[in-house]
Amino acid sequence: MMKLLFLVDAISSKELGHRITDIEWKRWVFGPFSREVLDVLDTLVRSERLYVDAGPEVRYIALEEPPPLPEDVRRVVDKVIREYGFMPLKMLLTRVYEEYGVKGFDWYREIFELARSVDRDRDSVIELVGRLYDEYREAFEMLPKEMLALYAIAVGHLSTYDVKRLNEITKDLLDLLEEMNKHASSKEPLPTTIRNRAKNLYTEILNTAAEAIKG
Image 1: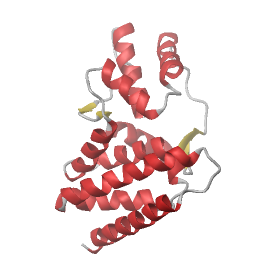
Image 2: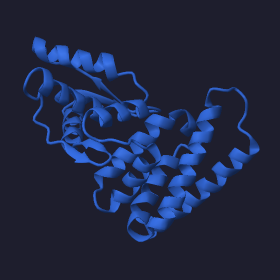
Image 3: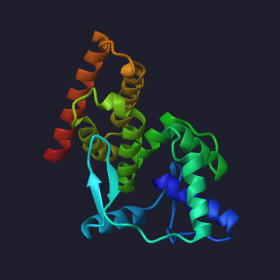
């Protein structure tokens, strides 16, 4: 949602000569982001104009008819949805980066950068968790349901105290998720080697999250 809304602003600037929103986009090396978007979503939920369907995929559901958009704005929004709305996450990020000023997209590098930046900017953990779930949702459905949340806690701890260990855990998680994604569409059970890797990594992440909670 964050990247699509950024594209609405970017395309409206080119085609209409002005941006549609007043959002102050943060141009991180890992992509456009704004806390304002999350704050507005929270406000709409609290005022009961949106409902949050929390799982397995978080969705925002409108509880009332939104006001009509001006025709020129609607054309831009429709264009973004048509051209980008159903792209896989990696492809969407690559297009956003290539077309709007960031070259050389690398998925692993992006995830490492997000994880390491949590000690400097806590908003990045939101982006990190969102990207991982969007890309590997089928894999996460085969893992303990709390694993992603525990990883987020572990990241917050390790990004401050042990970056080397953070990199190791993050790489192990990405490698595991890539392997699991290959098996997600198959009805065959996961190979024992992958199940053992998942069990060992879960234990390590759980223990690291416990360390963070203890202090």
